[in-house]
Image (cartoon, rainbow, N blue to C red):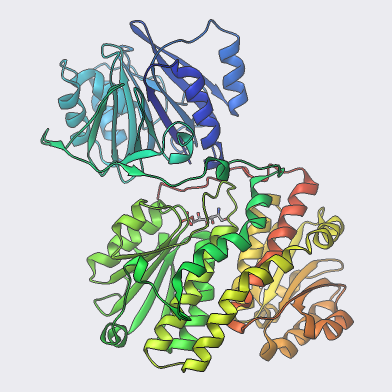
Length: 611
Ligand code: AGP
């Protein structure tokens, strides 16, 4: 989704802003632009399409030089992707330039009001009302002007603002859309996420809703809506700059797939002490009474994180014997949810900024639930809004298609399940010890599965031009099928569906014809024979079947399938961590062979900050 960077300092802003935008490319965008304060005016350059179009445009014109500027990558919502609609948006007088992430929900009413007053609009965006309001309200005091504007607008916004008459001030304000201030030496930044500025500074301030930052080269002042100055904590982010680079891999996605053994180890290891799962360092603990009082677990998430929730439902219900509801976060608020003080809500999110998940968990909190989140980005909105957070230590994930964050989320789910089951005496000490051992062995098993990279690449050569793919499985294999299908769809643009294997015969099997690819997941011993029957059903109708199973079932699986991938065995609970890996690699190589833009698939954004 849209990306923001702003700079004020001793250096020329333009190259820094372009570099920052490059780091934000992964969020997804369809146009980009930059505004720089040059001497007395604001100069804006924008281009539709990729950043290289903007860079080319900048090269063909006299250098854009100034120490203050804002820049933006836009993922179109209101108004088509075009130069005119891209940001920064200039106010009619040219006095203000604005970059915006989010949606101004009452922009039509404001626009009508301003049009009646004779204000001329030059774009179809909701953002332009902000620029025009700044123009109208400006009385020489930028703080009170911004306060007036944010009192008028409704919706979500992260705004970066510069003013032609204020060459030494960069202004930032946000509501329900993330924005950080990067604190440097003699220079300061704003950004929608730390990736954009981490090479210049790792000291950041996270703005809260309706806080206004007036940023100069040597100072950052933050005010509330009543103009009181607020003191804010500067947080040092412990990010390795190289972690956000490709490190020799052709794509971030492949790098992140290969990083999974480490990411899983980093997520599990610190939470195992003396053979026990311990969330003390996370500040998370549940007393026996807490756990007994939980009469329902409600999981809120979107996309792949929702698929982790689908796995979690099988696991929690089996081991804890408590009912689990997994809700697509965007639906939750509108379904009159049955949630109360006895519900444990688990919100799952890589970015921690997904607007739908954030809104859903706020709703659940308002209904009295305790909210525990599983989040990758430290200090993100979902993390901050939760009662408890368990971080997934996957490190920065840049590819739009999630891999290592998904895998680490699964691990937190396993640990939570084992921890709660032990406290509730649903498992004994021996079972607990066996699970812990399986957890500790997981990274090396993941590493082993990833060595099948070449085999999967060669299998992908048989299928990269197929039009439809079906993924089938039972129990957690079905949940993993959902994720395998999403991976394939999002990066290769091949239509695919995931079905519970037993459900196919109730309708969808009519779509199977000669050569249709069916990927059958059969990693659960107890359900293996049932899967064999389902494989035979689709084979009998002409399907080409690629079966994913464990080594012990190789012979039988090979006898009924066209192709087979075998993975090692771990406890049934943790099989999803091994089963998903070939599917990630399969999607990657299919997309690779099709020549797709793997890290930045069309129409998609890494962090979806609008509802
Ligand atoms: C997965 O590959 C997707 N990019 C997407 O479904 C993602 O999982 C979803 O948007 C949720 O994002 P979050 O984990 O940052 O909340």
